[in-house]
Amino acid sequence: MIRYAVERYKDCIEELKPLLDMHYEEIAMYREHIEFDPDYDLYEKIDENGGLHMVVVRDEGRIIGYYVSFIHPNPHYKNDLFSVNDILFIHPDYRGRTVAFRMLKFTEEKLKEMGVSVMTLHMKVDFPFEELCIAFGMDKAEYLYTKYLGD
Figure 1 (cartoon, helix red, strand yellow):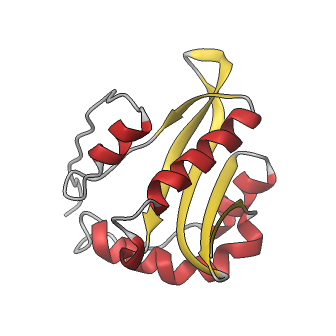
Figure 2 (cartoon, rainbow, N blue to C red):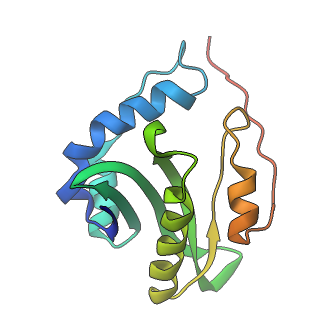
């Protein structure tokens, strides 16, 4: 049975690491230049300070997906809390079903309970899921461009 829950970083990070590696291999840009090396200590500190929100999706206890976001006031709108998506992932075996939509819905409900006003989400151009965002009622807000500046 698939379950959605808000979980604390320290309670699930070790279980998440294999999925994080899979996620990186699937979508990361500039892999030939930038190694995957998360600052796990920083994530833990952000979580301890109340700035990290993690929804974890499990099937029969095994993690199959996650939605991780940073929660903070926006410098442009100091009276509102924003949820800025960091990463989200659904294991390939569970895509094309309703798992992702339900994860977004669950996340939205929990963010509302926290008093969040705006939920933002980003996606890689090579791995779009715009239909899901539109079905979920999200608005397209920005484009983001990147350029590798290293050697």
